[in-house]
Length: 509
Image (cartoon, rainbow, N blue to C red; front, side, top):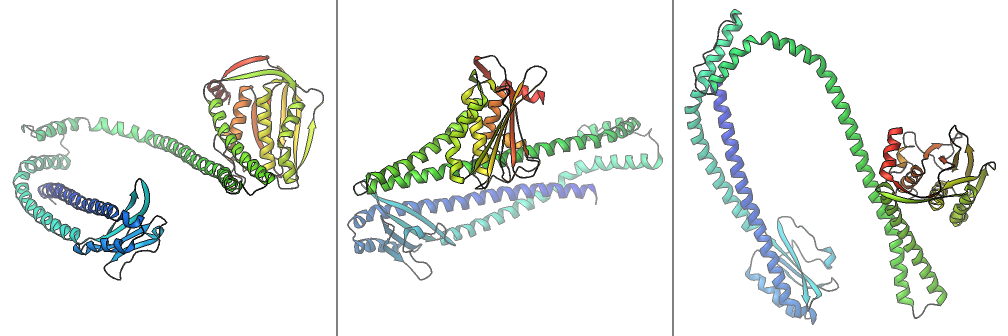
């Protein structure tokens, strides 16, 4: 196909595309505006109908309401009008046929009807909701308007296309002539292998610039070939490298999105359960305050208290993690007995152990028990690890706690391990579970939780210049979480920059 025909087709295509897009956009906007106007008009009609019938609904005068709805006979577009009282029961209706009818309950009102416009409005009297008005209208006026708009748009598009075609045939010659001459010169050079020939550069427009560039290109062919070979050698390596970087970024983004989704799902579940208990037992207490015995009311209050404490604990976990991972945090380092800290933690989780009939095996190295740490923070870590172990251990089984001192060159290190007999941790997730909002894929749907506990534990242990890790037990039954920290540190209050701790840990890794 000749270039002049290609230019003609290109210019015609661009012109037609512009015309069609313009006409389509204008037509679509007009149709949308017509549809929107009709919806707003129907909504105003529903509001006026509600105001007109508010008194009838308030006095339960459905005869007057039906009489008021009969005015819609003057508007053939209105096919259905329904009034519902404050309880959502059908109160009055205006129906024009058997195709659609008013639902008996306001809850059954369809939001969308095929080929119909719908609107509903609350009926209020003195600021109080007394009912709902629902209207449905056909789209005949819109269909007529759409038909006219399409006919006009097609006519305009055809006229503009014809004018464009005539102008295109005239102007394409000024472009195709010089280009065809340059193409003939290039064919001659290729056929004769005579690179001394040059193109005509007398044209005062971009075609002349193209000819100058063509002449310069002839002198650079050999040089470009060499550069092209060198580029080809490195291109594949760069593509592979960039592809790998993209895949890694994609994996990280997907993991972050999945963690966020899982966190929101878990938080919703964790908040909904105690909130439901608080609301339910509060309602029981209000309704039965005059008839219930004090003991029963006390039970209601205790259940409400447990729900509130659970919500408070969830909020505190989020706040603790925010404080630990960003900015400064105060730690009170003092000497203490690691066995006492373990016993304090066991007392805090003993009700959970008794509820599931779980036993405890505590094995301690009696040679060195002293450790310098923030007692409350370490108890928080131990309690969290014990809670997880109890949560994932089947009923009637056991959990284990081991403490020992590991000698190193600089100073002894205290090591504490908590083992369970649960489902274990999949390979590849034993580091991920310490990230915020992350849980093991074997447990993130079975035991609840927000995925914050282990992240908080990691931040606390890092602040003590220690490490925390997880592994599966050797016998394949359950998992073991171990943390280590220096047994001897400088006592007193210390302000720790948590971001600095995080950076040091990553650099060490």
